[in-house]
Image 1: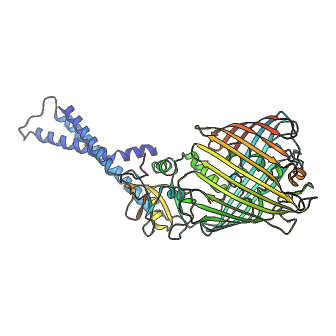
Image 2: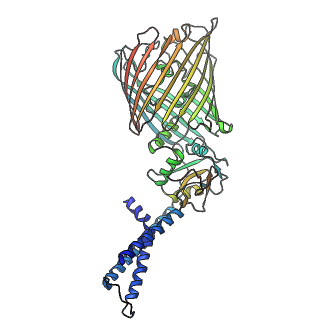
Image 3: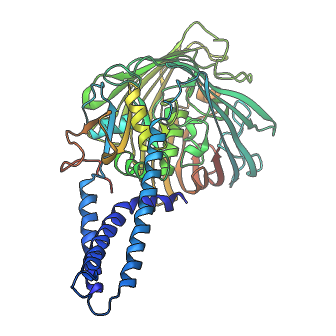
Length: 159
Length: 429
């Protein structure tokens, strides 16, 4: 009897966990400071921003692109959905961009979601990525191709 | 350790749900089994077993609370991190690039007017190990919109001596995406290859540049370096994503007296070279770009009359995550005063496909310099047809080390056709 009840409770627990995971969106959200006028960006424009080909945002601030550390799930999602590169290609891309004079360096690396929130919230022109579930009201989500995280057709769905 | 902790944190909701369920069930059973309660325990269960279970649940709950407290403390610490410090100037970064090579050819190297071998990497004996270029690259941000870039190359020459050259030294002012100014010695915005690839062989799939785009002191046929001013930036053009380049520089000093062709310090005439180029990276062709350009200089070549030089060029390139496709053409028109204009076309097409760490590639290079050209024939010892296919393989031994093997078949007016093989280890650090 207890065995049956245990199995039932495990199944129930698993169902609760699955529902909980679905509630928390794992889409990648593009975030900027709340005061930024940046509301929507196309996928291609987003790529150019994150490849540091653009130097200013729409408000005239110097664009400061942030990145998460290697091996973080956010970095992996950004490489897949924004850059469409692996980590080696990412390193090579920025080395080449610096060498050709197109960029002054790689994106500013931050090592936690809280650090991204804090830096983006406090820095005009900063742009970064977070799991949508890590976004709070200190920062603003930028729509991509007119879609917000969680919406059907949102292009930065975590793999 | 970090992964273990992450796993523990990730499992918190599951543990909490499961423990809660087990706790509720156990409490229910115990309540039913209480002596004051007349309900009997189910067969096969006893009080000790249930108490053990309850203790286990209590232990798990305590562990969960401890982990929650650790998480909260960690989040609190991160939120209290100081904001990143304001950037300090100058911020300096350094990279080194080098290549080590072996080259074998069915014919010996061909000395050109500067006394160096014409076929890139070819040797007097036709069979040599050789040092490629040791490239010291510095980039420093001096202020938010000001930066400096330098590329100094140590390389060995035909006399087996090593020499030092400042290949690039650029002071850049970048106030906006639409207007940037570079001053110094830079790569002329002459098509795609010369703008994209500089002295680090590691960047390119092939072992070398298309031969007519080789550097001036290595037998190249075009003014790949300029000393002057380059103004460039984006042009508001919607989905076409146009950009422009306007460059004014000293131009080249074609001579046989051993002087550097690039006029680093003294221009041998009052005329400046002017280069104008436009590049489009249309939204509808991600990874692709198209460009056109025109370069003009009035030359004072050694032993010749004033010569009017035009170089027109166009390119179409696709650079995706797997494929690299390049096609680029140049038409050089040199007209010496009192003579008819001479035209020399040059082009290459190149295709490479990445298969994991392997990138096989194919290139076809072609140049047909006019037999009566006042510059090529007399001063650069280059006349007539020079063309052939190259076939090679790049193997990325690691992210920063590439091993390459390339076969070339060279057909050149006035010389025996040649089979050549080059092995290269190119790396960056």
